[in-house]
Amino acid sequence: MKITITEDAIKWFQDEMNVKDGDTIRFFARYGGNSTIHSGYSLGVTKEQPIEIGESTTINNVVYFINETDLWYFKDYNLNVIVNEQNELQFGYEPK
Figure 1 (cartoon, rainbow, N blue to C red):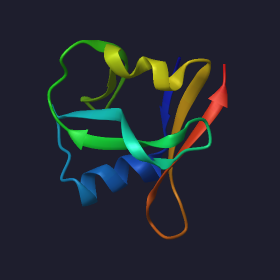
Figure 2: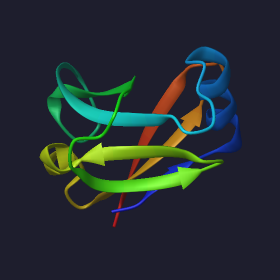
Figure 3: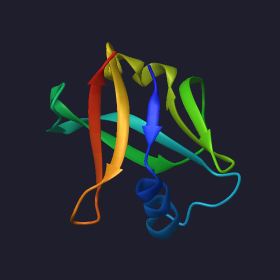
Figure 4: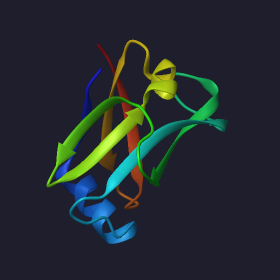
């Protein structure tokens, strides 16, 4: 799988989550909500240290990652992170 993050989303992380050089951002599966790929689950995001990275991308010395235990959520999909017109993060799932 691949994680893609747009420039607008990178700026969103800097402005809204105070992300700076050396930080680590985790994407994780959480119970509740609805995603386009898993009913009853949604994607969460938090600033925390990785436990066991399953997939990651590094942009501007910031590591955006998914722990090994959450890879099931993305089975057969790549993750695209953008900012929508309401200035909120939006997650897209592209088949591999």
